[in-house]
Length: 183
Image (cartoon, rainbow, N blue to C red; front, side, top):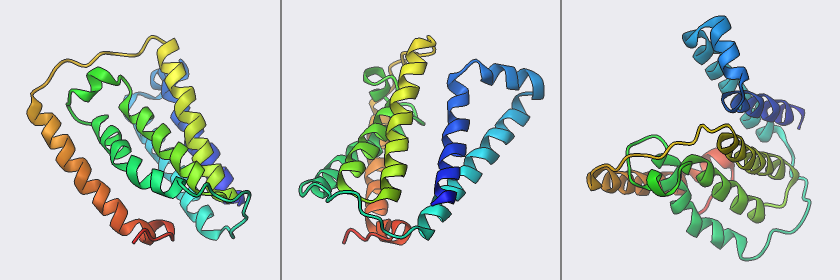
């Protein structure tokens, strides 16, 4: 459990940096390329600790998951995947949701939190949920929010095709990387 917590702290501490004035201070001190290298190394090490720490934890139930929560996750994940992928490619969804990745993370983590009642899952999903809500607030307060320009509908179609493919891969291989098969 210790490695899971250490990884969670590292991962989210580094991901808060872009939402704070600290980012520019670091870039000024080390340059943009070293900043990206440091950011990536910290992110990957935090994620590695989370994954390895989670694999070492024993099941410690906190509550019984809600009976309908598993179905909720299955039906909301395609929407969450669309939002997560939309953050990194041109599309018109960004005109409606200024922060599709954060909204996708809120949907993913919130529904998974309801569907899992163990301590390790709660730490992971509650951390992602809290971070996403906090980051959304910090971005809006910092005036860094932008409105996307309209793009061709071809990008929206590509987004949906990619998201459907990714969703089915995640669904099919869920058991391989989480230990909880969905089929």
